[in-house]
Image: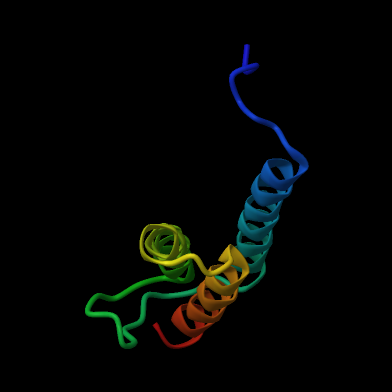
Length: 91
């Protein structure tokens, strides 16, 4: 059924981390519901909105590193995590 997918340990860890982030955010939302707020983003957002924007941004950061640089993707990962934390806190 999904034999076409290259399930390497790295891919499995990637999807497991995303699933854990979504689970943690769901539990956090149930325990402490949030309201929309406006940070430095030009729209009012909830925590879930900022998480989605952060994950999408991380994908673009990684694609940009692949397109224009030979630097290891660990740098892109560090930059993505830092951006996600900033976005979740002040976005």
